[in-house]
Length: 188
Ligand code: SF4
Ligand code: SF4
Ligand code: SF4
Image 1 (cartoon, rainbow, N blue to C red):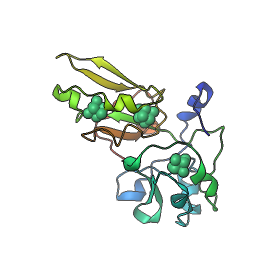
Image 2 (cartoon, protein in one colour):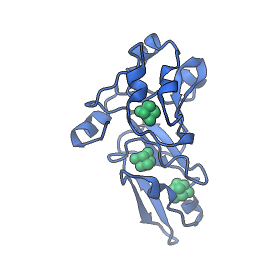
Image 3 (cartoon, rainbow, N blue to C red):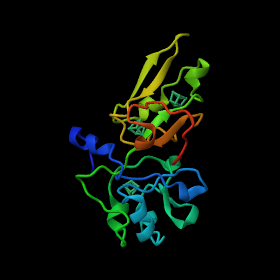
Image 4 (cartoon, rainbow, N blue to C red):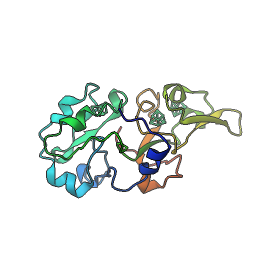
């Protein structure tokens, strides 16, 4: 199972690790399953067979626009088990323990309850990676901040948020230092 380490985190920002497939959903970026090959290769080789969808015990993969598989974190978090990638018969997903599964990360939008002065730490309690820290802001309510160098994009923080304030974005598009994207909502 993939566990991000220091060396692997450097891979994390490589552009060819995963891709943002704007073609999948009418101009709205979406997230391909983990260990997807670079976009042109993926689009050429994925035939929409649905093997990866069936392989995910967490029900995270669904058929998206165009028939291609997409990740949705509404049902839970990715455990990085690799089952989806191992089962792809076309080589559109290729599991490799030495390679990070994707470049996606979580961010907190302005919809967060703490931005309204309401105490909440639900997302931080879900993050096993310890990527979410709470910092006090003027007014006295601590607000969550995601460290993109620690976040592995597992999505565990997405569904439990009571106000859908977690967005998922591709690091290479927002920049590795972009801890809190505000409008980029994909993969949820
Ligand atoms: S790596 Fe495992 S948990 Fe994650 S999407 Fe693939 S099958 Fe599902
Ligand atoms: S769970 Fe949602 S509302 Fe609560 S602190 Fe996290 S982002 Fe904000
Ligand atoms: S996606 Fe959310 S829960 Fe998973 S590592 Fe990133 S901040 Fe933590």
